Every structure is written in C-alpha cells, then in structure tokens.
Image (cartoon, rainbow, N blue to C red; front, side, top):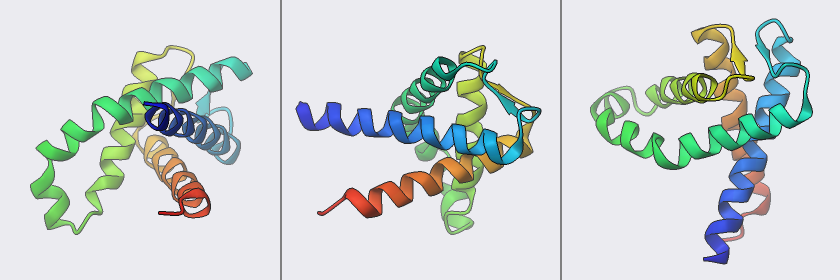
Length: 121
C-alpha cells in the first residue's frame, strides 16, 4: 500500500512540474493557473487522477489506433487527458488542442526523465 501511495505521489509531483514547465515554455496566454502556485499543485493532482483512473480505459478503447500508429496516438491521448483535467479543474486553463498536445508531450517527457533517473527495477 505504501508503494502505491508513493507511486501516486510521484505521479502527482511529476504532473505538477510538467504542467508548470509547459506553462513557462508556452506562456501564460496558452496555459495558465490564475497566477497561483496552489493551482499548479491541484492541477497536477487532477491530471494525476485522470491519468490513474481514466487514461487506462481510454488507452484500452483506442488500442487499435495505438497499434496502427505504433504508439504515436498516445500523444493524442495525453492531450485529451490534459484537456479533461482542465475541464475538471477550473483554474487550469488550456488554450486549445495544440497547447494540450505540447503540454502532454512536456508532461510525458518529464515523466520519462524522472522514471529513468529513479526507477531501479
């Protein structure tokens, strides 16, 4: 149980950092948090919850598209999860699908870096 909580906490932190990096790269006109640090943290929480509970179902339902595109469709799924998190959490504002696509890529890259550094298994 402790391992699951630690894994979710890591996912939450990585999501928050990824969203913050994306907002810094894209500018506050494209992705914003109403200028509050707490909004970044809670937006990361919502994104982590969406990625934990909804993303696996979406991946399963779109498995043929993922397989046909050799996994590239996962970028679209990541963008949809960012848009869903923005819809669920009001202070997170994402300008459009293109911004969500780049944000999903940034969050995914941050996740990959953190996983490659800290995962020893």
